[in-house]
Length: 393
Ligand code: SIN
Ligand code: CO
Image 1 (cartoon, rainbow, N blue to C red):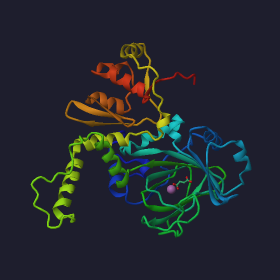
Image 2: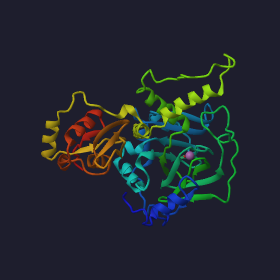
Image 3: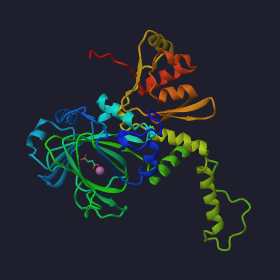
Image 4: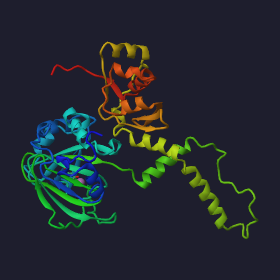
């Protein structure tokens, strides 16, 4: 962890990470004035629009009064004509995963190291002229809304249930009813930040013609996704002989009845199969490190020769974690661990797993750890690592 759990942080309004996690995280919103002192947004509206014009970058445009109706959503890539036709107000441009494309945005993530990194989704950045918003809505995400530039007014409408009615017939999930609660109504200036737990209704409206908002989002799989995905993972490994069994049963009172004993046998099969903590950890590490955009992982055409990799590192070349790649580790015992990278898992020594999943530089020093060359070569081939490219800056 970058900061000690008991060190007060300006970005948490003077709370320590331990206090924030105990009293706010997943529980209630927190407004933090001046969370990032003298904050300067790493990109400007034109640069954001430039990203939204690139193939493979997820971008949305939300027009409150679109030509095809209210709250019209269009998806990128856009071009100059799109931006040229837009009115002076009441629209929003939202670009996902800007941390994958702009290193200065990715650097911001280090400030959130008091949270498990595998919970992170991405940094979305939105630009909006005055009046621009995505309407009142609720997200199933924890999010830190950091004002990057200009002003945005945030209003909160309290916690709402899964069944809160949403407006029919539009592409956005906008709440039918939204009323500001408890005077939760603030204008955020650059460097101010608002933390919102999942399920909290909110509306953020731009108040200036240079409003940029960074959303640092954290994901949590739903029970629905988790059960389906864990069942798929287990299913790939279960032998066909493992199945419902009823040896020694008593003769049925009615052959058409699905009786309690039958249900209990099936329940037993399912619960015993699912209740395997080691398998669950293997699945969990894989699922939480799955890349957001699988297509962005560029795997090698030819397998890397570990000896050549060692030689390159010894000559001073460096490897880097690919932007958007996700790593995590889990100890198997005092010496061994599984390193999870981009949805895959590899067993290796504990120090190696920690070094690769952490912030350590990926240079020749790593080669002192047994098994490093082979694992680095495999991660390079999978696209999770790449060679550092020298820039002239
Ligand atoms: C925005 O930046 O416009 C929307 C962020 C949100 O409400 O989740
Ligand atoms: Co939201």
